[in-house]
Length: 294
Image (cartoon, rainbow, N blue to C red; front, side, top):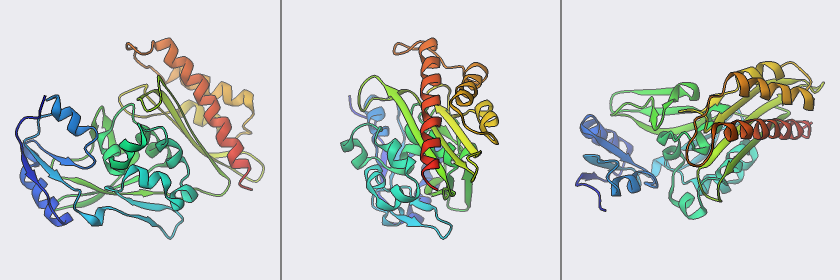
C-alpha cells in the first residue's frame, strides 16, 4: 500500500519548523524525524497525518555536547548510530550505547533519530526505559513557549508523550553519572533486531563502604510505559547488595508491581520469569561495575 495524501513541509531552521507545526499540528500534522516507525505506519495507513513537518534539514538539531556538570546534551535529530558510536557518550553515559546496540539493526539506527525513538514512546522500545532510569530532561519547544520535562512526566502511555500538537522535542539532557556508578541494560527478544519481549535497565552507585545509594531500576515490556521497580529500589537503597538481597528485592517487585500482558509471543508467566531473571542479572552487573569505579 501507499500512504494517504498529505501536505509536506521541509523547514531549514527550527523557527521555521515551529511555525509549520503550529500551523498544522492541531489538524493532524506530524513531525518526521528518522521515519523508521512513522513511514511504515503511513504505508499501511495505520497512520494518516494530514501533513508532515520534516526536520532533516535542520542542522541545529544534530549535535552531542558535554555539559559542565559531567553530563551530555543530545540534539533530537542526532542519528541513533551516531550516539551509539560516540566516544563522549560511551564515557559519560555508557548505558546508552549498551541499549542502542539492541535496537533493530545498524541500517535502521543509521537513519533513526535519538529524539524520534524517545518521542515515539514505544512500550517495547529500548531508549524510554533508559531515559527513565537516567532521568533524562527533555527540551520541548513550540512557537510561543519553551519548557523542560523530566522523564517521569514525559512518557504517558502507548505511543503517547506529554508533547502537545504544536510542540517539538528539540534536545535531551543526560545527567552526569556520579562517582562509583554502575549500570546495566538487559533484554530478551525472539531474534536479533526484533522488539524485546521484556527489558530492564539499572543505574546505581555505591558509597565507600559498598552500600547502595541512588538506585534506579526500570522495566519495559510490562506495561504501557516504563515501570520503576519501587519495591526493589527501596529494599536495595542503604544496604549491602548481596546476591540474596538482590534476588529478594527483584522478587518483591515482580510479585507486587508487575502485571504484564500475554500475547502470541509470550505468556504472562514467561514475562514474569524474564523479569526475575533479567532484573537480578541487571542489578548484579551494575553492582560489579560500580565497584570497579573506585
